[in-house]
Length: 250
Figure (cartoon, rainbow, N blue to C red):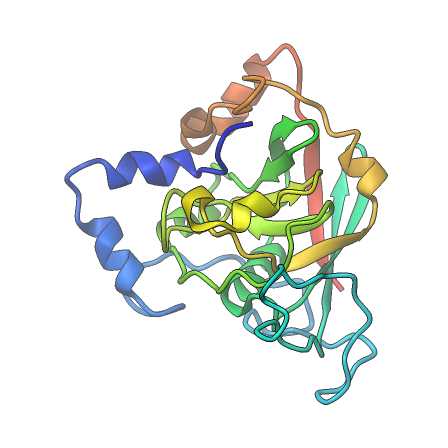
C-alpha cells in the first residue's frame, strides 16, 4: 500500500543541508525564524485544547482502543477537542484527544485554528488504507513544513477513522495527516513508522469514503509540486481532488 511518508521532508533529509536538523532541535514555538500561522478562529489558544463535556478527573466518551500490550501504558482520556473539516464531499467531524498523543494533538489543533488546512486538497486516497492531507503552498502557512515536532509514544490502535501524522522518519512530522480507512495496526510497529494516533473521526466516515482518488494510485498527488505551486498544479489536473474548504475548531 505504500508508506505514510512526507516526501517533502524526506527529500530535504537526503540533502546536505543542516537547517532542518537545527529546526528539529527547536522547542515547539521556539526561536529560529519559524513562520507563525495566521490568526486563530478558535476561542482557545493555539496550544490549548478546550474540553467537551468533561472534567480533568473523569474520562470522556471515546472509541480509541489501546494497542495489544499497551493497555497499561495508554492514558485515561479526559479531554477532547472537536475539529470539523468542511469538504467538497461533506463535513467530517474529528475528536482530538490531547492525552493520546500530546505533541500531535497540539499541532493539529494549532494548524486547524490557524487556517492552515483551508482550501487544501485531500492529496492521497488509497481505498482500504488511508486518506491523506496537509499540504499548503500559500504563505505564511507553508513555513510550517520546516517545523517538525517530537514523536509521541504509539499507544492506540490505528483503527478505521483514527488519525495520525505522516512522517519521513523519527521526529519529522510537521503538517501532513492521514485518516485510516482500514485496520492498520502494522503501522504502529517501529519498522513501519510507529505512527501515533491522536484522534478519530466521530461523524463523516461516509464522507471520507467518497474522497476522490487522483494522481498516482498508491502515492497520490506529487507532494513537491503541491508545496511549490499547488494552485497551478491542481488547475492542470484532469481529475480534481476533494478539497478541504475550511477546518473549524469548535
